[in-house]
Length: 459
Image (cartoon, rainbow, N blue to C red; front, side, top):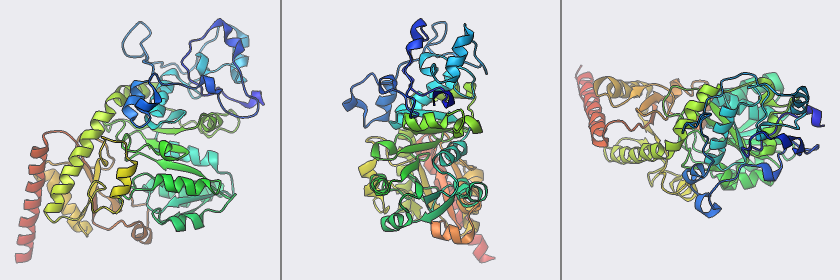
């Protein structure tokens, strides 16, 4: 079977050597030898519950000429010294773990290094970085499910994911999905059909309702029926570590908090080396054959931002909690998992990595789309509190009315089942300016709304 296999994950970082002929390959499964997997340079007790410590334990990549930053490998293709080497590379005998590269759609040194960082962040054996978050999700689903396969998924998901599961996969691949309330564990259990349901898919903190999933309990429930658990952790990097809580695969839209600059589209699949290697198989790998390849220059940009992700997340979360607390005191209907009256507050507290807070997003329910739009208008145009825009994780506050934007793929009944009200405003809290400065801008916008309401009632 070796001739059907691509280069494997097993990224110990060893440089190419003359003795590379001794590279071992397992002929039966797509898994790197355990001794070849990356190891962290700190004791497990110090890093297992702190993603920042895991990242700090990675080997530092220096530049080609001794630069403190790694070099960008912008080549699409790579040369070899001897023709025989290329044959051995295509059989999987020689691979990127020994510094042998074929073509950047397969593996690229710069992208591979970013994958090491994301794997350390999530506490998984391996990670592969993709051109977008949706590329990561769709590749995982296509790898784990065959025609006729079944998925159980949360009823509250990002609109693009919902569309993929509701429309695209059934039409093109005969893969169907049953949507359930992810907080109703009995309903989840009943929806999973043993030996048929391949994946239980949910978001760690749901988009946009901020419902928190019980990752340990859901993982146990799925595993008892032989089903793999895939968790989208886009809303809560650093805050939650789904793989450490029992999930099999973690996916990300790196475009959001991990990037932090709203200038990059990227994604990641994090999981066992065996799964990632199967996804890179020359004949049947979803990542290999669909080609959602990340550009090396993008990977370099992102690798320079990950070291300060922990600091950024702490400030996003600190301000979100403070604003949510103050909004509640003003009588505003606010949803935030850091508030004690949130239904899953204590659950999140029990699962979260200590010191990172409760997430950088909050929701304000204005009841109607008209009121939601007026609030956003004043927050942007009257007080400069934030920007009306989709996405999240930016250093400025971003806000959108979810029902008419990022969840617009759902019909009215689906929105109702997901708990998305017409006036739900999702806010990704930024960290520019001082906290008090930004809060005064929020209060000014609320005052303008009250003036508008008074004038409207008089007329």
